Image (cartoon, rainbow, N blue to C red; front, side, top):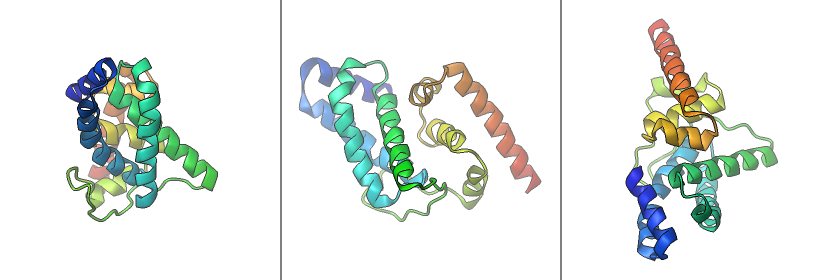
Length: 169
């Protein structure tokens, strides 16, 4: 969200810790839930959020264009690296229980889980970021490192595909 990105830009300019703290408290629960939905174990998700923020702090001021998207890209890269090291494939539709991060809903309906499970990992990421997290097309494009127009087109195609699947069910 633009106001969260503005907090980081302010922090980079002034070093005001409260700006970074507000960004952290706004983003960490959503980032944790996103990682859990992507198949990361709950405990590992806590570690990845901390590691993502650690890397983010060290590099974001040199890349202030889309800080929130940059944070999510770092987290996705860390999760992918962790899965590769363990030679695991992330499983969408993990059933996370409520935790201290109750500020952001994590539950997907059974129908949504079933529909997402049939998609490739990158397609799931795109839909979860765009529609579950409410990221803009631009932010999703920044995270996935693809053109914004491609995000728009893929989102529309994926929504149509999911609607067709839901109609067939």
